Image (cartoon, rainbow, N blue to C red):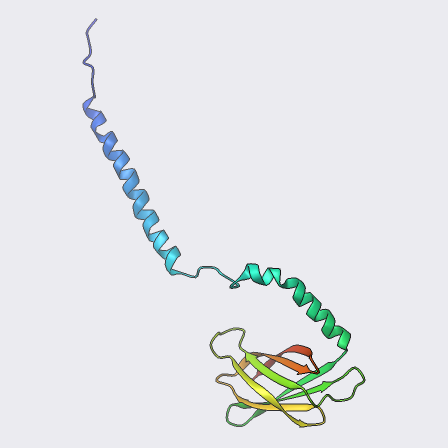
Length: 164
C-alpha cells in the first residue's frame, strides 16, 4: 500500500484567498450602504416625540376646555391683487355675540413645502371680525391656523385653503 504525503495539497492554496475575497466583497458592499444611510434622511418624523407624548393628556384637556367654551370661529380667506390674501376671522362666544377683546394670531403653513410659512397678528376690524393681509410666496394648498385668546381662554381652529 503506497503512502500518501501528509500536509496541504497544492489545490488548497486558494482557500485563504477565498476567505479574504469574501470579506473584501462584504466590506465593499456595506461601506457604501453605511455612507448612504448616514447622509440621507434620518427618518425622524417628530422632534422630541417622547416629550410630546407625555404632554398628550394636556392636549386632550385643552381640547375639552375649548369645547366647553362653545365658542365659534369662522375664517374666510380672499385673494387680493399682487399675490396677497386677506384673512377675516369672526369669533363669537357661546351666546352668539361677537368677542371683541381677543388677541388673534394667524399662521399660514404650507404642508407640502417647509420654509414658506407666514404669520401675522390679526387686528379687530369691527363686530368680532379680525383681519390681516399677508403676502404669500406661492399659490396652492395652505393650512391656516388661528389662535384667539380672550379672557384667559384660548380658541384654536385650522382650515385648509387652496389658492388657484
